[in-house]
Image (cartoon, rainbow, N blue to C red):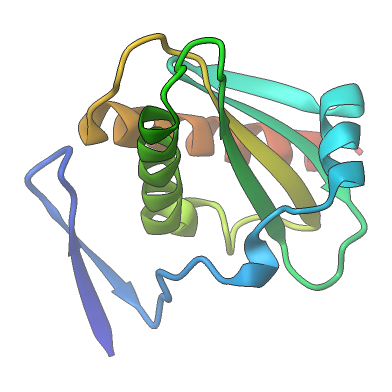
Length: 146
């Protein structure tokens, strides 16, 4: 089975075989303790307007657990915050294949939106791709060092 995905950022097609573009419950980070640990001990990567804070975990169920957040200080309207979070989740869901089968171990990740204005889908998508590539590079470099 071949799935064809067209990128909105570039007019090109990508071919993926047997890739599931879902965001199941097991991949959602819900634990307050893990979220607190991410902010206390985690490492961060920034590709404006997104920031990724991550921490290696001993979770055996899934490779990556993800949460997204938008500052209430920058966006008072819940409608705008929820729209940005939907865009972030959607771009992660469509581009997680960049890292999902290429890393060892499991990680808890938190995506933060740092901008002060409503973004377009293309802005979020471009930043998400950059940040996922940086994450993969950093994680692979850390594995080589240890």
